[in-house]
Length: 378
Image (cartoon, rainbow, N blue to C red; front, side):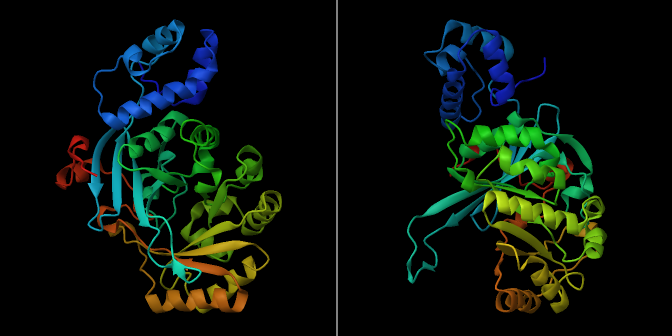
């Protein structure tokens, strides 16, 4: 029998409805499952009556017959970066495939805000995968080298948050892992609705969905998920360069994409995050900075310049030097008044940084980096 996830909201709600069980009990099931897994992340023996008290008897019968265990995926291994701020989870799905999720910890007390020390402390952001592999084929991205394998179900997406929550309290979620989220649209929407509801209660403002620019999906995203943060992997200021480094861009002409973003911003009244990977001699010259500035000057955006991460023999690209990145940033800021940041890369030593997520199980097993989940001491 195929394993089913209780975090697949559509499935469990349909089953509760067929059994005549009030759907108000669904979040209660989720709450107790999370609490139990936080105590024992493996939880080999699962007894629904024992683990989730005070449900109607019909709910227990349903859960025993339809959901033998609460999760359909498991944590195969965990890698910790030497920076002590980054952990990568290798998650095994029920079909035997693997995806990766990355926990990034930040200390909000570092630096100052308004001339005063920042309040708060450590917070964690989870980078989530939405597909096994990716069909976009971006030439600078390791995930693209895998090709597309399959979409994740909404339950498999939510389970990444469940697994990660056993290791760290997750404050933010970014869909910047493996896959193009908007190519798995229905599962994306359902999973985010679960994350923003009880018991997770994540604010939509703390969830970011990144896309290469799937225009038809962008056109309906705000209506389906209001308040969400949208990030666009632009990576070039003109269509020709985009097509060279992002073959899928041929299906999404830059002019039409910018029109879709203008409409999205008009409806959402939110800033858009523009992701721009810096490739030496390809898209990092001063002329490119001016082209990008002119393209974006009528938008409310934050441009995030991303240092290119080496991906072994898979890439023909080189990393832009710091001088070029700084000059590029100054042009966008000084000439066009566009807020521009440079991404601090985390987890490069465990291939957990931007563009590095690719599953090669044999290489992982031979690396000696496997950490059993039970041995973790966070």
